[in-house]
Length: 206
Image 1 (tube, rainbow, N blue to C red):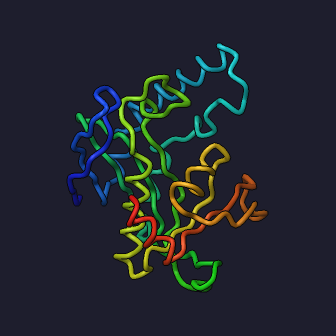
Image 2 (image 1 turned 45 degrees about the vertical axis):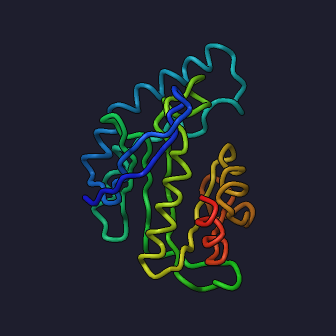
């Protein structure tokens, strides 16, 4: 498991703290993270519903389970990435490095890295926690995905399907292009893609 030191935001102090980026997590790491995340995520969602939060304010990923996703790491094309701080995983991401091609010019037909799942720990998620512990998790994970794409020879190209609540993040912060609703996606989610040129712009601003 490869590691490097990165920085994330400590909302308690307003400053930054060191964290560890793991770029080759094994299945056990995802299982252990879910043991901590799952109960917190479910209880926070129940609290929102009990307090009358409308559906669009309830987290759309509340049913995710990283233990179930961990089996994907047995496949060669899949890779798990995580951010650890204070002894806990603060964010997780699953990548697929083969089997998806770009749809946008000038990269049409070229391979890209697909991001099936990316999530901040529930205590870092504003929809679940009024006072999130850490920030900058999503952007650091996305940056890691871009760098994996470059290491694979894909020049930063990425693709993903976004939950509605995350669309603005990918479009405005991550510089991805909204390709519209994907009729082939089981959840009819919008598909987003990052071109080679856009990945360079993103890294300059990240």
